[in-house]
Every structure is written in C-alpha cells, then in structure tokens.
Amino acid sequence: MIEIIDNIISVEEQNHIKNLLLNRSFPWFYLNDVSFENNTLERKPGLSHYFIKEGKVSSDWLIKQPNNISKLIDSSANFLKKEELKIVKSRAFLQFPLSEEMIKGNYIDTPHLDLKEKHIALLYYVNDSDGDTIIYEDVKKNKIKKTVKPKQGRMVIFDGSYWHTGSQPRNNIRCIINTDITK
Image (cartoon, rainbow, N blue to C red; front, side, top):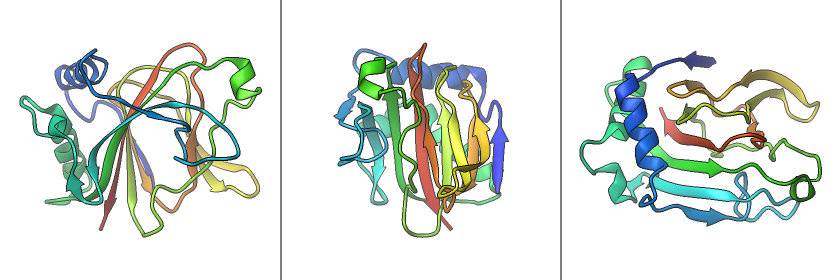
C-alpha cells in the first residue's frame, strides 16, 4: 500500500506548521546522518526534532496551542479510518543542500526501515522542495516502487515494510514530519 494525499490539512494549517518548524525559535537537534544516527558508510547531516519517541510525547511543541501537528495526526487517522493511532514515533527532519564534496556525487540517502516491527509510515512534506522520497520494491536490486516529490501539504502513507529513503535537496531546504504507527 502506498497512498499519496495532497492537502491532507488546510492551507492555513500547512502554513502554520511550516512557520512553526522554520522559525528561529524551534529547537532543532543535529544529526550526523539523517538516515541512521550512527551511519559509518556515509555522512549526510541534518537536523531533527522528536515529537513522540517510544510511544511517549517527548516535545512540548506537540502540545502547544494552536497545534496543527496534532491536527495532522488526526487527519491521518481519519484517512486511515481509525479512531486513534498508536504512534511509536513522530519526528521532523530538516535537510540542507550539501556540497558535491560532502556527498561525493551520491544524492540518495541510505535506504532504511523506520521500525523492525510491522507498521505504517506517514511522511508529511512541510515545504515544496527537491529531494524526492524513494520507496523500494526490492532494495537489493535497486528496484524502485514509487518516487514522491516533496510538496507542501502532501502526505505519503505506506507499508513500513518497504525500504525507503530520501534524496538530498540540491536547491532548497527539505523539511518533513515522519510518523510511524502500529496497528
């Protein structure tokens, strides 16, 4: 299952989330690599912020009002026809264009699974950007199932057993909210 939903929340709510996350006061935390915290194969740094970690709220920014991040999660539950989602983790990522020297010509981040257990991945694009998301049919054969372009207000929902990755933006910042839910 791969579903792409444009404008999962209103444009007003989209802009609120974008302004919240791309505000000077939002607390971002440095990552040595956006795909894996301890990636020894490559280094593609970025910033992250956990809203929910190990099923527990880990950020005051999730509960500040007015809060359209909570509305985003509610809209996802509505789309999935679930009264409530069991969220294992929800976090935001911010990536910047990197130099050719740093990425060594490889714009594709390391393919990964968010969780080992059965889950559904929700990726919400905070802003228009380059740096497509790649979802693999067969990661070992580099067979791509779907490529999704970041577009403000777009959400892609997919079976978390699909290996996936982002690609590095070349021209703009790339900001997403990645939420993983179990059934």
